[in-house]
Image 1: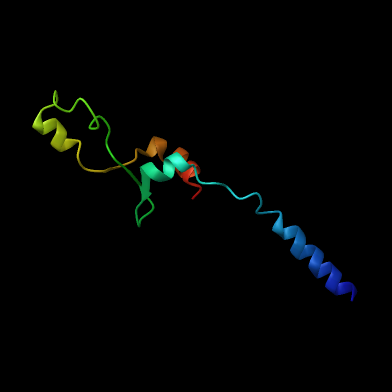
Image 2: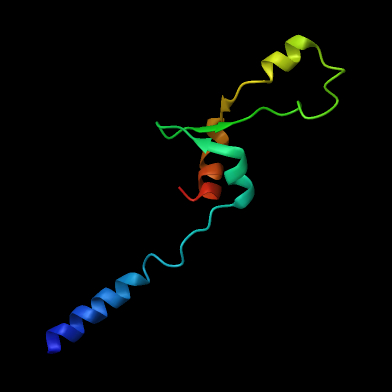
Length: 82
């Protein structure tokens, strides 16, 4: 019976190693997606309003998603809790 208590105590104490769980930043999960290779994608800015003053070429180049810069990668991964 003594071994059962020790096993329970070890199991119970291991639970707190992983707690508390990190929460995903709700703003970041709406703005970023993780690719299959682990890179982070984001959409480009400056296309929401005042688009009539921008040329067609500017708007076309702002359309696609891009990979997040490596300097920001670690910070965004922390926000996404991955």
